[in-house]
Image (cartoon, rainbow, N blue to C red; front, side):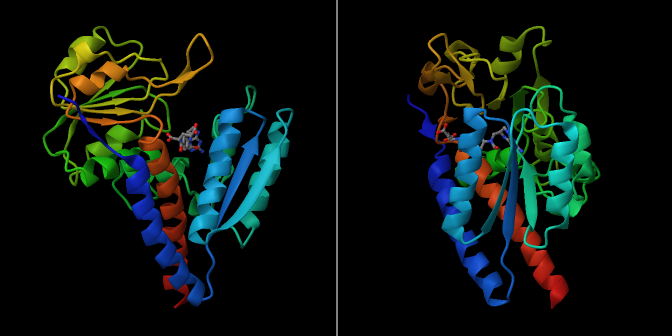
Length: 287
Ligand SMILES: Nc1nc2c(c(=O)[nH]1)N[C@@H](CN(C=O)c1ccc(C(=O)N[C@@H](CCC(=O)O)C(=O)O)cc1)CN2
């Protein structure tokens, strides 16, 4: 058996096509949505992701506001740009590309953002609203995972989901989305302190790997027919980028998300969606 591919590239393309029409409608009302990004430092991965976000903006008609600071930027330098983006009327929503350089207090930077301009759903106010089940911009990668599963008809209600990882962008936030009544999944969160990861994985209907440990998830750990989503990015001993999921998993699983081409493109599309939703709310208030 070979697993069905959860094609994030194709699913993201359909979302972007819908967004292109919605942006055109907003522009007719005199509103041009704008996405801001703040990139600090010269990490090639982060540079690539941010460049991709602005390419996507151009493709759907969203304006781009690109701010960059060197790796030597101080906390004050970064906070000054955050204040500028908060005040910029052309900027509907923005993100601070993570991770920030060592020595920078990331939480302080995020807390300084205007929550109304949080395009990432990672501001403490947005995360608090998510916990309280109130309307909030959804974190892009977790939202992308759920939308991809829905697109391919993978049942979430009653499913046993194992999330591997506890980072803010995926591990901590995905369980909050999966356990909403609309999804109704049961979630086990695993991490480096989990005593027997393989035992947890073997009973999972859905596995989301976001640990950043190359090929951590092996074929023998997967229940036949399960859905396996690979969100991890790390480098092997030759410097080649590898995901968290061993390629052999495709022979056991029912569905797999490729990496690249799975959750990454969904993350980017749903960032644009958050900006368009914010601009549509602005249009409603203006009417
Ligand atoms: N402020 C944020 N920072 C980070 C986030 C985030 O959601 N918000 N997530 C990750 C990085 N990330 C988004 O910024 C991201 C990662 C990967 C991709 C992507 O499209 N990957 C492609 C492959 C790209 C390539 O290497 O050629 C794929 O998977 O097909 C998009 C966004 C950490 N920081």
